Image (cartoon, rainbow, N blue to C red):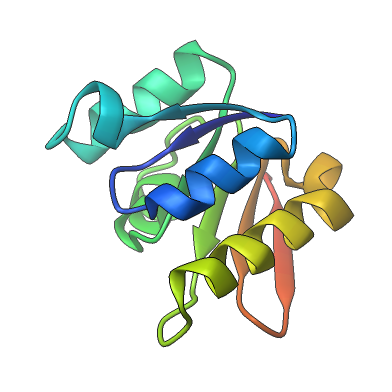
Length: 117
């Protein structure tokens, strides 16, 4: 999967996904402090699914109707960085194909996926 990791995505998650064979670009490595609209535009330009912990992307996608190639919102507060990496890796392995062109929310216990209307 082609993924753009927002700057709030832990380095361990980025590294784990790369080890899993995914093509992962990282905002933290390329252009920290990039505005959300520009991050979403970059993900679209690269046909990448955006991986983030920032709920503001829900606002951009649902309320503002912004086009996207897919957004994965991580809700993993309280977990260690290694545990977060394992949860995200497992979620993408299990349901990654469904996450393309959808808005997914990943928690330690659930994966919710809402297709674009």
